Structures are given as C-alpha cells and as structure tokens.
Amino acid sequence: MTSARKSKGGRSRDARGDRGIPEATVARLPVYLRALTSLSDSEVSTASSEDLATAAGVNSAKLRKDLSYLGTYGTRGVGYDVNYLRYQIAREIGLTQDWSVVIVGIGNLGHALANYSGFASRGFQVAALLDSDPARVGDRVGDLQISSLDDLDSIVRDHTVAIGVIATPAGAAQEVCDRLVAAGVSSILNFAPAVLAVPGHVDVRKVDLSIELQILAYHEQRKAQGLIGLGELEAGAV
Amino acid sequence: MTSARKSKGGRSRDARGDRGIPEATVARLPVYLRALTSLSDSEVSTASSEDLATAAGVNSAKLRKDLSYLGTYGTRGVGYDVNYLRYQIAREIGLTQDWSVVIVGIGNLGHALANYSGFASRGFQVAALLDSDPARVGDRVGDLQISSLDDLDSIVRDHTVAIGVIATPAGAAQEVCDRLVAAGVSSILNFAPAVLAVPGHVDVRKVDLSIELQILAYHEQRKAQGLIGLGELEAGAV
DNA sequence: AAGAGTTTGTGAACGCGAGAACAAAATCGT
DNA sequence: ACGATTTTGTTCTCGCGTTCACAAACTCTT
Ligand SMILES: NC(=O)c1ccc[n+]([C@@H]2O[C@H](COP(=O)([O-])OP(=O)(O)OC[C@H]3O[C@@H](n4cnc5c(N)ncnc54)[C@H](O)[C@@H]3O)[C@@H](O)[C@H]2O)c1
Ligand SMILES: NC(=O)c1ccc[n+]([C@@H]2O[C@H](COP(=O)([O-])OP(=O)(O)OC[C@H]3O[C@@H](n4cnc5c(N)ncnc54)[C@H](O)[C@@H]3O)[C@@H](O)[C@H]2O)c1
Image 1 (cartoon, rainbow over the protein chains, first blue to last red):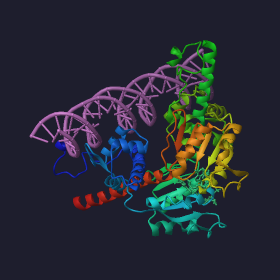
Image 2 (tube, rainbow over the protein chains, first blue to last red; image 1 turned 120 degrees about the horizontal axis):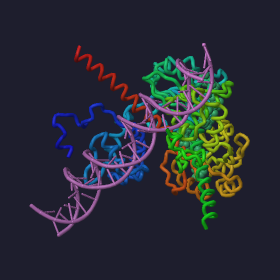
Image 3 (cartoon, each protein chain N blue to C red; image 1 turned 90 degrees about the horizontal axis):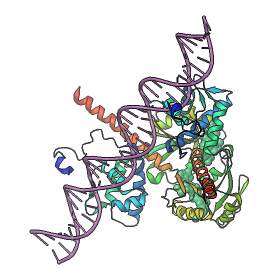
C-alpha cells in the first residue's frame, strides 16, 4: 500500500515532512524500548506487535501505529526483529549519544537520584551534583563530589549539559531553574512542587509525588462512595 | 443557559449524573489546590480565574471549565473565595480524610520517600515501611521502623491502608504488587521500571524517571537537528 | 505454483480535551 | 435606578489520540 505511494527517490522517512512524532507516542517509545531490551536479554530475536504490546502493557493497534511513525521496520506475516527495532527506537529518541545531566539539590531525594544506577545504563551521565549549602559542598556521593552552585556555568560549558534535574525545596526551584537556563540548560526535570516559568525553547517535565497520590486518593474515594451507593441501592431495592 | 435547563428539584450537582470528573481535570485539581494554599498563606482571600490560572500555570478558560465540574463556587464579577474553593477541591479529591500508605522497598529511593515531609502535610500518613531484606528489617528511618513483608497483611488490616508505594527493584515489582493487592491495597504508586498487571478494581500510577529523561532527550535531539537543518539551509540559500 | 495462514501498516470513525467566544450574573459609580 | 464594568459558567468548534477493521505483504505447506 504505502510502497506504491512512496516516492522512489525520497528518503526512507515517509511522507511526514516535519519529522514530528505525536507527543503521546514519544512518551511510549521508552516503554517499548524497555520491553525490547527485556526480550533481547531473553534471547528472543523476533516479536509480533501482539507480543510487544503485551510486554509494554498497551493495545497492539496502538503499538503498531506508534511504530509506523518511525518508519516501516516490521515484516508482515513475521513481526519485528527485536534488536533492529530496538536500535531504531533508540536512535529516534536520541539515545545513540550520551547525555550529560546535572542534579541540583542534594538532599534526601538528590542523594537517591545520585546513587541511582539506572541513569548511566540508559545513556545519561551525571556530570555534576550541585547544592547551595556550603556544609554539603565537597561531600562525596557515589563517585562524585558535591559542587557549589557557583560552578554551574563552567560545568555546563565543559560537559555540554543539556538536561538539569531540580531536587531543591519548592521555594528555591524557580531561582535554580533560572540559573540553569542562563547557564545553557534547555531541558529540565523538576521534582519540586512548584510551577516553573521558562522561555519558550526550554522543555520542562515535572514529577510530582503528591499529585500522584492525590489522584489515587480521588479514585479511592470514588470507589468507596460507589460501594456505599450500591449498599443503599440494595437496601432500598431488595 | 443551563439555569433554564437545570431542574429545580435536582441536587446542586449539575446534570452529570455519574459524578465523573474528566481524568485530565482530576490531574489538575491538586495543582489548583496547591496554588490556592499558597494564596491563602499570602492572606489573599479572593482570586479570579485569571489569577488562579497564572498561579497554576494553565489557561484561565481551562481552569474555569475544570472548576465547573465540581459545582458553581465562583461569583461572577468577583472571582473565587480562596478558602472556600480550597475546601471544596480538597473534599472532591478526598483529602478531608487521612489516607494511610505503605512503602515497600526501603533502599535509596524508599529512604528518601520515608523521610519526605510532604506526605503528612497533605493528608497522607505513612503507616509502615516494608522490606524483604532481613538485614534491613528493624532499622529506624525517621520515626518508623522497617517491617518485614510478612507483616503486610496485618498492617494493611490494622491501618486500613488503601495505597501502596512500590520502590523495589523492577524484578520484584510484580510480586510485591500481587502481595499488596492480596492484602487489600487497591491503589498503587509504582517507581520501579516495570509494567504491572493488576485486577480491574486496582488503580496503578507509575513514576518513571528514565522515561522522563528519554522524553527530554528526544526533544533535545530535535532542537539540535533543527539547528543543523537551519544551518544547512542558510549555507545553501545565502 | 498456489492456497492457507499470519501479521503489518493504515484509513476511517469516534470520543475526549483544549481553547475561543459569549451570554448571564454580579458589583460599582453616579 | 441604571448603565458600565468585571468575571464567571457554558457552548461551540477544532485537533489529537485511540481503536476498529481490513487490504496488502509476507511465510509456509502441499
Ligand atoms: N524526598 C522525597 O521523597 C520527595 C518526594 C517528592 C518530592 N520531593 C521534592 O523534592 C525536593 C527535594 O526534596 P528533599 O526531600 O530532597 O529535600 P531536602 O531538604 O532533603 O533537600 C533539599 C536540598 O536542596 C538544597 N538547596 C536548597 N536551596 C537550594 C538552592 N537555592 N540551590 C541549590 N540547592 C539548594 C538544600 O541544601 C538541600 O540539600 C522538594 O521540593 C520536595 O518537595 C521530595
Ligand atoms: N534511586 C532512584 O533515584 C530511583 C529513581 C528512579 C527509579 N528508581 C527505581 O526505584 C526502585 C528502587 O530504587 P533504589 O535505588 O531505591 O534501589 P535499592 O536497591 O537501593 O533499593 C531496593 C530495596 O528494595 C528491597 N527489596 C528487594 N526486593 C524486595 C521484595 N521482593 N520485597 C520487598 N523489598 C524488596 C531491597 O532490600 C532494597 O532495600 C528501582 O526499581 C529503581 O529502578 C530509583
């Protein structure tokens, strides 16, 4: 079907000239990548969209459509070559290169992040740990030493850091964010419960534990109310 | 408009019989709550949708629509009473009651979570810390002692725990999840990079650091490619 | 070589959420 | 009392994302 329309001379990249992958798809690609890595570790060389979808916890039609944005890497009647697809997704996400990140705010959470091995294994190098507390500067965490926030500019320059992680208290988050942006960081992962204002070219993602808990609480409450409602209904109807 | 259609005899709750609030709205209510708390702390008693929207980092039309799902708590020409609205949102989310949570897997991340004060301040009580490692059981963390996983059933029963947090390695996540569900937990917050299978009545939310980083990396890569593309274009055209 | 069986890639239908726009309702000033 | 002003609550439209369904493309068997 597509092969008929696909212009011979064109690049392998299909009709989508803007190269833009839907945001919802981008958010799932890492999940697929993880599923593929797991399959690869189990010596599975080929997998159908159904297999992959199960491993990733999604619907197979959605998975196929998601993959179709990257290109046509499957074989009809067969499935996907696990390692080939894995490489293609990794390339698309940008994991064929290493990324340097800095973590700002080395308290409870910052320590956990600094000690987390899952970073490096996925191509993210922690270039530096930063804190404003003079009492903390110089402490070793893992095999890094905590630096002063004043060294931010030179660290970002020397390591070409594009990604910053904020793990400071909420009150300091905006100021830290501003300094990161001024230093040249253009992607920020924010753990502080604060709304950050940034220039248009900077991406911010937030991870907010208490929001997650509150969402769960809302649904719990609804479940409980449902039970009460059911009870009343039974009592009234029966 | 609606007032004409709104049946006089009906409850204050508008036409939406199912009481269901859109998921996207539910996810924003905690953000509004935080903004309102912050305003309240600054002794602001009334705020317009525009003020609130700015504080919450959203569009004011969206905020008004979100609030309209809860009821009509604003006053036209005036705005919203900060404390009143705050209470209404808290009630809707289910924060007028306290929730007990257990944390399973007290390693790097588990320690950070256990020491986090932001839980209690928002109505979430940590009922217990659990770990399978005998060497860790009995250790104090904050003002709790780490319990054995074997005590899960009795802890959940005694504290009516509805929410469980998983901070174990990915390999143990599904097993821990199963035990939580078997013990009666019906909401799970999962930090392990694993897809969890649960019965239909159980809610799962995941927090996945490396997925967030990968999404940022994708956009970083696109920004960089855009610059290269621009450079080529300039070089060719000029 | 041809037919049966599998599985992909995608067109089409649908539902949800975002945002613009505006009428209704309140306050304020005269 | 009444018009001007402010701000909410809601309607309408549009775009995105999900899902279904199926033709096309591939393999395997006979
Ligand atoms: N600990 C958790 O499990 C957890 C969970 C969810 C969210 N959070 C959020 O993450 C953030 C950090 O939490 P935490 O428990 O690690 O707090 P913490 O108080 O233990 O650590 C904060 C660290 O930030 C440093 N800091 C303060 N101001 C700074 C500044 N201007 N520049 C650089 N560093 C600065 C402090 O010196 C300290 O080391 C908070 O916003 C918290 O709400 C934490
Ligand atoms: N540390 C981080 O910053 C970070 C960030 C993102 C995600 N994560 C994820 O969070 C999880 C925990 O990370 P961590 O760094 O704290 O790991 P960790 O190894 O420091 O801690 C894991 C803890 O879980 C316990 N455990 C293992 N199996 C268990 C079981 N079956 N039942 C109960 N407890 C069990 C271990 O005894 C240990 O105490 C991992 O899945 C990790 O990928 C961690």
